[in-house]
Image (cartoon, rainbow, N blue to C red; front, side, top):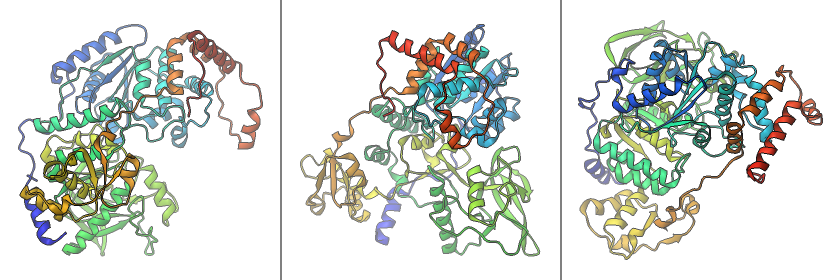
Length: 625
């Protein structure tokens, strides 16, 4: 694109406000966890939950509402105010740390399993891996696990964001509720992100498991508590509706129709320049790594001094991981005074901070002076620390160990700062109101962008949406939809490799172009080919994208229904089952064990399941396919 065209794009699309919002509705002050701070919808939900929790027998409550409707605040208020012990299981480590500071017993999915089943970290990670396609054997494994559960003083278990954990974890919690008469509260949104690792027995959303297990659904938290901007709220609600039109729950592919819709709603944000002082949100760590390399290019082009601090200290000769944009992680900590970072405390609490200064001693970096964005008067000097479980991702730790001269991955010293970036998973349940964000559209599923949109309060909080791959196609589609004289041109989506400025000038001037109208287009009928093809000048009918996906029953859904309808069978199996003594066996031994007769408890469970199938008139299908 020519310099003149770039300037024109900036002029037309880059005039949005980039300053902090002056909205009087969001002070940024944290509310006290108290009934008086609940809105009328939350108060009604609180009352309904408490009525069920008063019952002596266990109850399963589902809270299903879109992001930003105050689910977590409601449940934390319940955890603080309810008179019996409540434990909260939550996805984000930093959020669990913050809740602990409020005297709420909180765990991540992994730490809950470690604590209550006496497992090591790597054992807890593998706890719900489903390898066997024998669903009754997998159910039996969960039943055996239930015998190891340390109930302690527990009355209510709250699991926040039910879409993320393994479906096996949801079923195990239900079995525990049967065994220990626990009340369960599952909170989430059917369109939130799904498990990173899918089970071979359940490739649908966890939403469908919850619908089988629950006794009550609360879905009337209809007031969005996060978004203050009325027009922005409408845009997010419309995007949510489009996802639900594809399917009511689960991962929705981020197809061309949805990407073009976002372009039409947030057009100016596709043309603004990248700003490295914003929070960049992406699906993968590789995208974040590429962002940091672009940051270095920007610093070099402006002559700005920067420093790279290795994750190892005290040696003169340090072998670092090779610099490569293809790396999953960035090999060093990139430090630039005047830029923002995320400071992670030893307890795992995250703070947005500004790097004020770098402190040297004998030409070596010894300390960093930081100020807190939510309190500019609060200034702190931080030193290198041995990074703990909260301060570095386990996968990042392993990557550093495998790619550099770090001999002990449990002894990594570094300043406890992270780049001013987030993955969409790390954005779940988070409100970003201390700065602007940039959203990457390099995502497999539209749900990622939905989470990103829901993390901010105003349209002006989004500085840029990154989507260079199809921006020319969006411009062409917009032109053909609004200006072309060709018949039925508005009924197609278009992809091409023309210069953006060549199309854009006609849109700006509201003019028809004979050159653009005379392009010969290749019409495609297959969505996948249209999305992936490198052929120039292709189009597809919009009607091809109007088909919705149907829910398919899965083995785990069938098992959940069996467990729900046969609690006495589950309790009897628990009584019969031996406690697994965790004997380590080699692969060869495990294969030999399969020849042995199944335990009595497993044979009893399988027999009861077959009787249940026969009674319901169901024919066993190979649902794994």
